[in-house]
Length: 110
Length: 115
Image 1 (cartoon, rainbow over the protein chains, first blue to last red):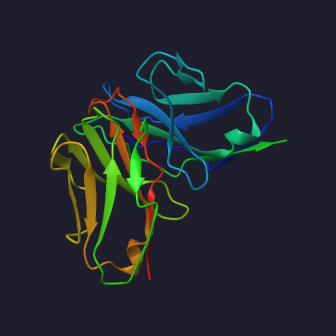
Image 2 (cartoon, each protein chain N blue to C red):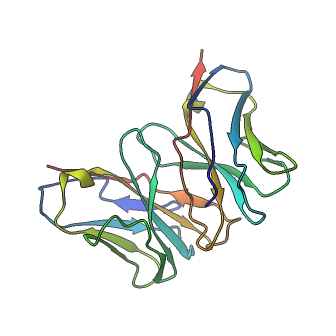
């Protein structure tokens, strides 16, 4: 299973865009990039996923580099409720299990 | 319900006892995953079901842990002879299929405390 590397923590001002980076240099061609977040004491919440193309939904945008070795999750207008641990995960292989790392703790500041 | 449901939400048990944790996946989801999360860590994969069968149980830590999904819907994680080190939040997730492009949705977890 491909591994991911994320910064342990980041700060963002409320109302500004939060850009969370992730490196996944060993990703295989059929593996997807997934983002989840976890707010304290809750189960992980699905945010977005992509294979090659950039993706956008009501929560966020996902930018994947052309070589697919890294990606960025963008929260366009961060709010205090976006404070959470954000996990970047490469999913694929025989069982498509999600392998979590330690994630990025995003702290949105008022 | 609309989401993944896990019961109980909290479980306190004595060391050496047997416990069962239940997961009700989203209706129609064929893939089901169990994870364990210790304080300050990311969720750790335990086992994956596709339908009724365990397609990958490589994450189960030892033979005290066992999971079943007899009818391809509800799953039960069973822990025998519990130890204090088993204390953690146990998370269940389901997805429409086991394909890489289908998102998995998590329940709120069962917090297990072994005293």
